[in-house]
Image (cartoon, rainbow, N blue to C red; front, side, top):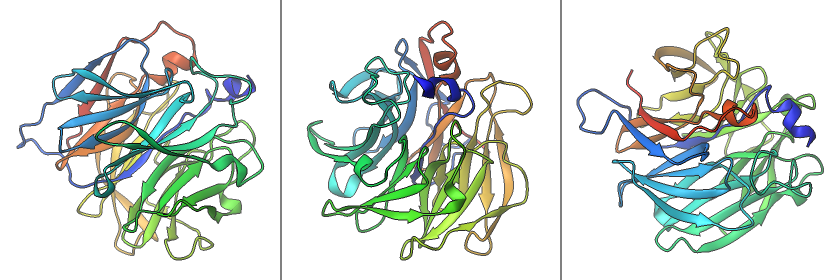
Length: 327
């Protein structure tokens, strides 16, 4: 269980390419309470056809949907699901795609899966039937904690790995490969590397937890990796979201609750993400450990995961919040 010891240094995150930005003028709820003991949701996505959010459980290894009143509906759960982090809804192909991995804090964690499980699972969004499961651990020799994913216009899936310095690609036809591998992704054992991932135009934008760094990578050339110069320290980076204004929203959380406040930052760029500036901040209150973001028809919501309570073996949290983000 060695991964438990260093997971308190940094936790995980997810990133999605969705649209819009919250405002005070819409009628969406300010917050949605999810009453589900020890769920510890990490990834979040929204599906407009049924007006529900989808949450992946870090602890229980399942996926549920939640309506705007907080009612919970089962979506996917079986013995192969251990820790669900990044989630993406592919509306064009009616799919839900999720990262299934293991850091050692799941009810189904085992010595065979901790730090090794790296499966991308694909479900039919209507029926909940599992369509595919892709084992990415065979592509790179090393530890694995696949963290987040995104899709391009052609339906190709890109996946980050926090324990190995690579980004994987699964084509629309199901071919798996390493899309990008770079020395800038490397971290010392015990640290989290690559985390969230999103698409802006012709580039992937990728977060690295250690050092709170952002990179851009052309979709047509995974060998070209450029660090994005940001005008201020982001403290930590978890989930990312690119909205319809091509602004990058960055979740910053704090495991200890000391030193800096948790927040969602809004970044813009004038040079195709060679550099970026923080132009606005949504301050998060209460040491709730926000992880990821989703857009509900243009209104942004953050998932409050409370993951430190799980990692530090504190009393279980029973109620989790999906909170509107207003800049």
